[in-house]
Image (cartoon, rainbow, N blue to C red; front, side, top):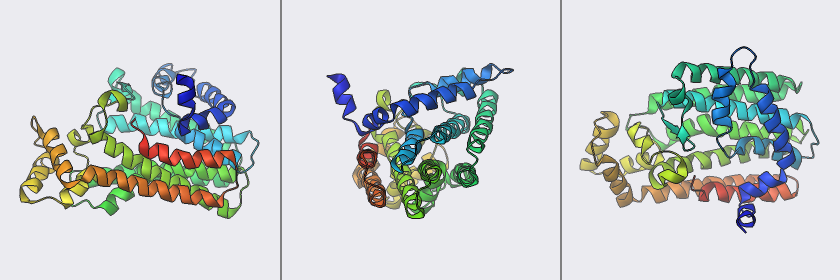
Length: 333
């Protein structure tokens, strides 16, 4: 009965529909993350790759290609490429954020060291470019190379925007479009390109991925304050402790009275955090309804993603992708 219930979740239905392709992707990932001369590379990579992540991004590539009538084999290469890029960014992010936990497990930089995490991340980026060139499609290479640059740009923008209470919703959107949505949109777009889809369909896939990625990151930022530590795989309030200006805080600052603004200035701009500050931050957010507003914004972007699918061919996978937009907003991890 548990298996039946699980199969009714959009993410799991999609995984079931793409099971054979995903098995090929996983085999390719294990093969390409090997290193003859540096055994630490597969050790570090396996720790993260095999930690039970959703594999959402490679599934988006596979679904986009199949939806547009592609029969293979290069959608598998592209899906593995997307997962390698994603894994590389996670390794780098955990070093930048000095994180101790990811997906409910100790981070690679904690188990090994920062140098290993950065260098293994670089190795995975290099592997991803090897994989994408094997498709022989220059447009695919351009899309994924551009996405890699935009992801790094988004991370750097977040560094410069962090701890600055003047950071606006527009800047926040620019950050998450870079660090998260860029890989979602590239994942779906290259699926359409490798399948030889029409330009209108490729644009629709890009728009779907972009909007889905924005919704996904907004929900992540919401869950940092509203989730359960045992479910989300990290500690509640990690973004607060790292002084990140995510949407719940940006909205709370915009609606703050003088004492509340002084509080945000102390804990975010000055980094003077004390016992009970996370609870006070949550109380302020509750007073102004910023967590509810954050979730509503995620729903709005999920709606944009769903609308974009109308330009794509009728197919069971299209319906699964539509249902996936609801899952992304409703998820608790």
